[in-house]
Image (cartoon, rainbow, N blue to C red; front, side, top):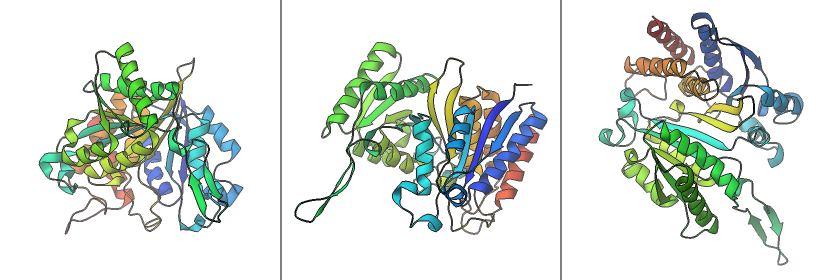
Length: 370
């Protein structure tokens, strides 16, 4: 039996509690069937935390996250909290967790399952077999740079300011994650920026190249402008293996790549920090999709992205690759059998509830486990 690991589950808002409920069932299955046991605690984030504590994440919850071996998060936000000041909106809770935990590398795989090729908006031959990993820098760049804000000018008009800024250290640490991942995949990294018009892009390109030349000569490195990368993801996405890019471009490109797979409800993500002296790495795992308040509480949400996020947790935080493979194979098997939630069902196809999809995945886990 593996030693107990401390997991913090933050279901959040909207469909978050529904999809994380299915993850909880998977956690229970692994404890019962694979002797992989976890010490699980649940807490509040986002609007749920605002309703109880008045803030989108409490200091106590952040402390629990810092002490956990991994954090699993559902989703945050919803119209109930839209009128709140910017600094206490639900999304600020997630941003604080990323910042305080120093989660600088966001991993977003874009994998097109064979059974869902027809669900993509692109031609089947373009997306069949797609397997891309996008590594997005998460704690720097224009979302965090200073100065920032809105000011009133002497003539009464206003000006909004955000600052794009990166250092060598910030670029190297996220690029290392990309190169290390590439070594376990196709040994190809494409670094994406706008070096043709931005000095921060010039620095990004030069520093990624310098790191590759010094430490990763076995990995092929190419460079691409962000606008061209956006076009190439639609034109020929399978040319990519690992893409590494900054916070802003990574935000946009990973969402674009997600739709190549057919549904946002399918895509997991991992946000990773540094490894400490004991080997523990700060990490948070969450589905790419949002809180979907329009379907919250109706049992329509697709839990697969959350289940695949759990698989990423097994792989990257706990080094349980065979268990991660088991979850991913179970998902592929369920999809191959034609089980669909509403977001995946085509015209005339029947759809199942969140719970029923969870039932199907658990049944497939049981079958694969023998």
